[in-house]
Image (cartoon, rainbow over all chains, first blue to last red; front, side, top):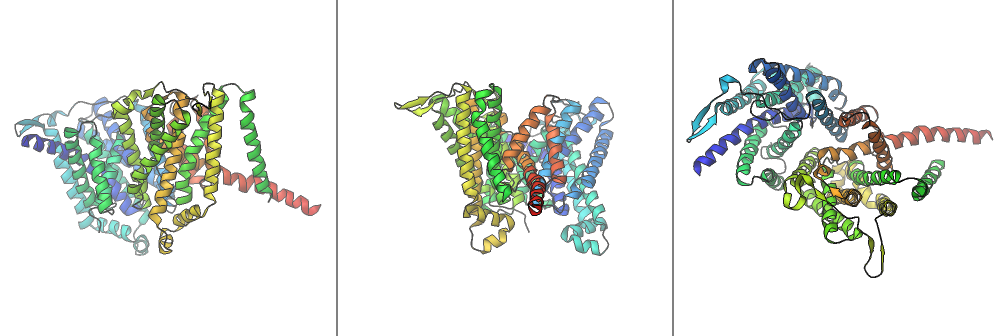
Length: 286
Length: 327
């Protein structure tokens, strides 16, 4: 029993890392730009599709495919911010949300148009193919790699935001846009950069998932719902909250699949409901 | 005011047209009108939240589906259309009250996130809870039960025309009720909350209670719209609860205009005809749908009704005023 629990916990940790990569960008964009991007999950999906195309279809190496996919989605992110999001910063909140919601519809159908509606799964990259014995059961090396990678990204983000000059200007613009602008921070440039970084984080999650998770239309919306739950648990605009929230949701989902195979979604909703009733501003709100 | 008189005239003419419609049209046109009325009810409830309270829900399809499934379930057991519709509305309102308690506790951004999430939860329930919902097959063979009081009288709903008049009567009743509501102090307070939640709070208004009431009403209207679907199509399936269906009242309301009472109705008619037109050419309807949303938000936030009132009627009004001055 114990080994089953530990094993399932590892699976949950692995799932949590994909969720973390997605929620990190969602929360970063909200924290700095002040807009909640409902279409953030679509960027995750686009990352998966682009990586699948380079890696599974064109036969490039996995690492190169992930990099190309990041570049592609980063470019899409730059276009989105520059030509659409920039026009809505001063609008009322409902209009902002509706615009980003419109992009979910556009990207979902665009993907169906280009890649078709069938679910696809490419082969595993050879150098990560294999498994380790954990508590006497084989655990894929790839999943272990994802867990380590997710933690590395968390450390990198922490370092970039807390310990570099760039991070300091980003935090300053998030804290007080006007004041930062007055002392010479190029706000529009910071906004574009942050949006591109967030888009690339989402794409990273999507691209890294291609060999083990299904690539299909609709994976973006399925993921964004879980990212929302994470945000409610951790608090909006808070990276630490996003990381811990992702761990909670990932592990709970894994145990949920084990215990209530049909209603696994319910467990995380029950936890979210509890957080909303007891501490509506999230567990890590300042 | 000439604009108001003209508006009343328009509404009267429209009603007369709708009442006489089955006398000269085939069976397809009444079907289209029923669909538009369903969508209009759906969107008007939604706009009670968006336009009047400033709350944007992305999960209204969940309550629509709960209304549809509850009505279908009841009609499969008890053959009475009014009872079926009542069951649908009751189930949708209860679900909205239950989930609303969680949704209105937080800021508006959280509200939108939560409604989308709960909508998806209802969708996955409709999909996976096979014993009750029939899974992806849905519920089939739902009868278009008669309207009546047992032992006294009974009107068969079998012919499309009869069902058309039933939906028309229910819709007109529901719209009049909503119109009454919109002119009440209740909605005045909702508008106050929309414009400044803090100020409403300071004047001693229990903001959360009002938001919850608006949410339950919106859920009830969505469920009412939903419960009119199973007798029409004789089946209900999970896509009714899908988030793309929740997007419909959003676009409909935006198209018609969120700050006018008739906006969602006008938007529903335009939306349905537009959709009917576009799907003839392409299966990728959602991409058009999304693009229209983006364009409306960026360039055309007022909506059709305001545009019509300000530009067209304003133009006519200015002209007649000038004419009168000369005479």
